[in-house]
Amino acid sequence: MQSEARAAGIDRVEVVSHLPAEDFYHRVGAVWTGTALANPPAVPWDRPKFEFRIPSE
Image (cartoon, rainbow, N blue to C red):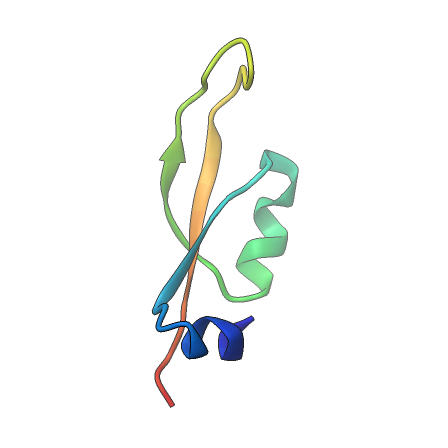
């Protein structure tokens, strides 16, 4: 993912996570950036937001 993002000129990738996947994103190096608020009826719960920061080579 990092090489593809870097090639596209992207320096960060944001992820809005499902709550049970929060630990996974921490383990793979994502940084917590906030909370995506619920949007009923489509999504009735708040969700954690993360980002992967893409280092330049």
